[in-house]
Every structure is written in structure tokens, then in C-alpha cells.
Image 1 (cartoon, rainbow, N blue to C red):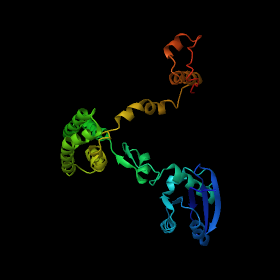
Image 2: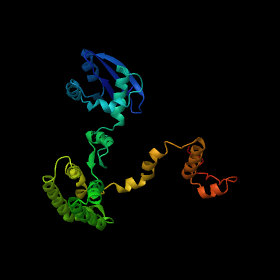
Image 3: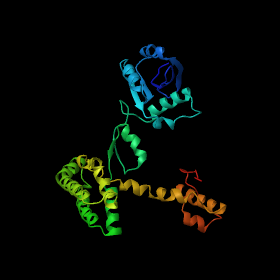
Image 4: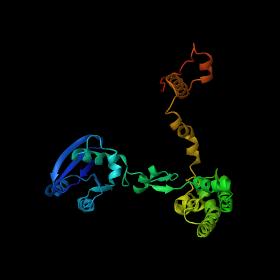
Length: 304
């Protein structure tokens, strides 16, 4: 029995322990009294141990790391989603064990790359776990564009000129190799970005608190490091527009497809989506309902 990962549900007197092997199979379920914990783990081969943050978590983390184990502390909200049954100590320990594996916490095997995103709150847990955040210039630009279009804001108009210069550089480097792209960005985009930041800071002092202009400027200033991270990394895009374009149909349809209007409308919609997912010619299918086109051998599954 080789234990690779352990989840501990901390308590005042009795601790619940759940362990799995490298294949994810549960190999340990045990209750330990406080005075048994150190003796148990000092005899356990080094492994990854997960615990929820609490008053005593840092004490036990230091103690277990002194025994050559790797300890990861997690906020309770990151563990809650993995509780499978009614809340009890055993279920909590199992959830902690699963969370420390699934969340891929920073460490020897954890992913610590860069995530390009907008301000979607669902991404914040990744940044708390060591992932690097890169902002989206398009989202920052969009807020000022709305001010200019809807209110004729001169601040929005001027800022759009700065963003226009940054976008011009991106068009210039789009087909270049990462090293050359980074060099040109640092030479050209850095100057524009620094001037934009200074200009935004000055304008922010002139607009009233709580105004739409203040909120738009704050969006950029508070995320400045993330928004300009792409300048020093030739592998990063300046925005996540490509991804948003790919998921546009999903984002638009996720609410529309909740309601079909009637049973027949739902059936027709299901046929339409299935034909699309199965690479069928929908126009031909509608024109010849009695002789539907043949489904390719490579895709015999219809999605309803």
C-alpha cells in the first residue's frame, strides 16, 4: 500500500484522515487522536497532504513539512464542491484529498502557467493557487469605448487613441516569432503603455467618485500589471478575443436554449443541434425528411 496523497480534516481532538494511491484509489481511512498524528505521519513515506485553512492549519503544516511531507493549505470554499455525501468528518477528509489533487495546487506537479482572461470571478481561485494572471486589453478598451459611444466622453475618445497604438503594434508582430514579438513590444508598446498609465492616473483625479468614467479608469489601473504582462512575454496575446469568438455561440445560446416554447419546438431544436454536431447537411435533411442523409461512420452519436 503506497499512499501518494492524504487529506486531513483538522479538529480539536480527533482528526479524520483519507489517503489515496497514485491511481486515485482510496487506501486509507483512519481516525487519529491529536497525540497520535505526529507518530502516524513520521512513519509515513513522504506524500502530498492537503488541509483546509483554519486556526491550527499552519501549525500542523510546519510540523508535517518537518517530516518531509509536502503540505498544501486550501480555503474551505475550494473544498466544498468536492463533498459527495452529507457533511461529516470522513466526507470532509475525502473531499480535501480530492481537492488537493484536482485543483493542481502549485508544487512539483502543479500547473503554474499564465491564464489570459477578463475579470470573471471563477478564475480567481486559480490565481490564489499560483497561476499567473494576464489581462485582456479588449475588455479594458471596451469600457472606454462605451463611454465614448454612449456619452461622447472626451476621456474615452483620448484613451481609445492610446489603445489604437497598442493594437497597431499587435498587428505588426502578429506573424513574428515570440522572441522578436517580445522585442518589438518592449521597444514600442512599453512606451505607449507607460504614457497611458500616467495619463489615466491624472484623469482619475479629475473625475468624481462613483461615476462611469471613474469605474472605467479604475478597471484598467487596478489591473495594470495583468493588462501589460503580454509586453514582456512573446507567447502571450494582448487579449482573449480569439477564445471569446470560439465560444460566442455557446455564450449566446446558454440562456436561449433553456426554453423551447413547446415540446415540438424542443424536438426540432434537438434535431437541429444533433445534425450540426454530427456534421450532417441540415438543409438537405429538411428538404428530404423521408430520406435523411447518411451519418458518417466516424460519428454515429446524435446529441440531444
